[in-house]
Image 1 (cartoon, rainbow, N blue to C red):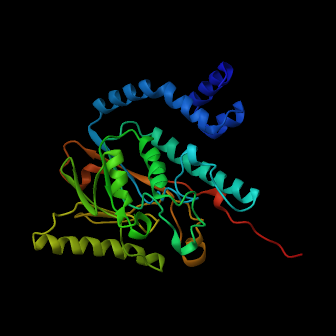
Image 2: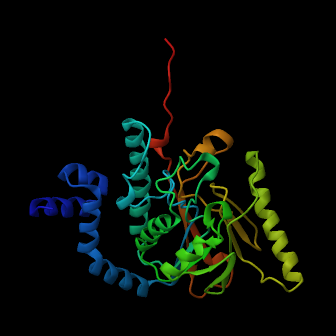
Image 3: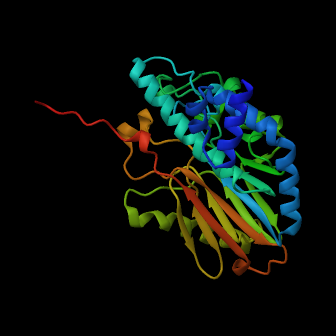
Length: 324
C-alpha cells in the first residue's frame, strides 16, 4: 500500500467504515487492507482490551457455531475468499460477494466486543467432503485445507480460552480421522463430543446435535427435551446440572428458558445458499453469533445477560426470472 492509501484507510477505519468500503475507496485489495489494519492496531487493540477487561465485573463469552469452513458459503477469511471454482463468471462473483458480506459482518462484530474471556464453538467447524452433492459446494475438498481456513477464523478472534465440541461425522470425519480434533490441537482448544464449562459458577452445556422441527412452533420443544434429559441424567448422578444449554446443527436461533434453566440453539455462520439447503430443507436460517456476559459474583441465571448478533444476508436473495 502507498502512504496516501494507508492514511485514507486509517481515517476511514476510525470513522467506522468496513474493509469493503475502504478497499473500494483506495483501490487496494480487501485482504491487503485487512492485513494492514490488523498489523497497525494489534498492540494498541490488545492494550485497550486488557484495560477494558480489568474494569469489568463480568466475563464475556462468545458463542459461534456451524462455520462450515471450506464450503463456498461457509465463513471464509479474505485469503480464501476468491478461490471459487466452476460456474460462470457472474456466479463466481456473486459467491465472492456473499463471502465478503458474511466476513465483514463477522469480523466487524468481533472487533466491537472488546476482550473475550471464553470462546465456544458448537461444532461443524469444517464442511468435509460434501459427497452427497459431489463436492460441488466446496472451495476445497482437502480437509487439511479446510482446517487451515478454520484456523484463520479462530486466529481472528482474540481469545485464548477456546472450547470446541465435535460436529457431525459427515462433515468432520475422513479416513477414520476426526479433523475437528486436528483443528483443536492446532488452535489449543479443549475438545470433546460434549463439554460442560463453568463460567463464574454458571455451568454451560455444549453439544452440537439437536433435533429440528418441520413446524415453527415446534422448534422450542427440542430444547425443552434437552433440559429434561439432563435432569434425568443428573438424578442418576451421571451428568452435572446444566444451567445454560447450547446446541448447534439446526442453523437457526431459538431460546427457551424458565427460572431453572436457559436453553438455546445457536445461529449458524454458514450462509443459507447450499445445494442441500435449497433442494431439501424448509424453514428459515439465522446467520450470526451469541454473546454472554456472566457476572464475576454470579449467583444464578439472573446474573447472566446475552445478546444475539444476526444479519439478513442480502446477497443471498434469489434471482427472479420472467417469462415474456
